[in-house]
Image (cartoon, rainbow, N blue to C red):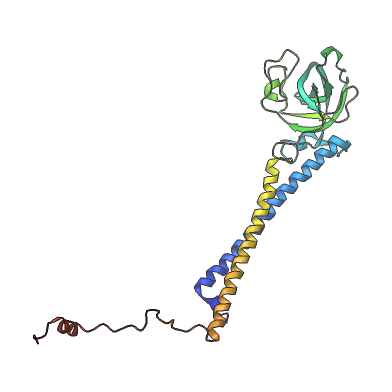
Length: 277
């Protein structure tokens, strides 16, 4: 009954099934893992923002260059704050409030500087009222962030639109690292700035697209199995009917028995008119 499975047609169907189903499952699992990575990253940012959970800090150099995996990780660096190069980064939100970041350059032992967001102040703070940075040699621990792009331009002196080496290159007399950290234990009245999710790593529309693609690949796998089973059941029914004699080997001609065409000679003779009566 199942001899039809050895026909070339069914060999093609079986090979297609054996290749397409694992492929769909692998692709679906990959899309699901990407969504789970985004969920884990978002949870880590939420813990830092809402509960103040601390991770073990790692040396800054060990986390460079910044990637989606290292962005938001706790990094530590040693150096001295440069109060002569401190900036306000306006129009930054913390929850539902608007205010400014307080950014101070940290001179490290290698001669370069690391931008450090020491905290956030509401409204438009007076630079003279900003709490001073600690003096002397300090060890700073904060969440690592990648450089920003774009931002406001034409700001007054002492203000910065974006936090990046490109924005600071003409404002400070030394090399600036193209990353920044945000201190999580800011001193009052400064409020700590929680790390923002790296682009393409949080629960945005792209993340839910990954979840949708996961469902699509699993549906494709189920559809292939369903269609193979449907074709298989149909072939089994046809084979069973043939064994029971319900399907004749030679189907009858609905137009009736075929008539043999007359030979050419007979056709010519029939075309010659006979003698008149």
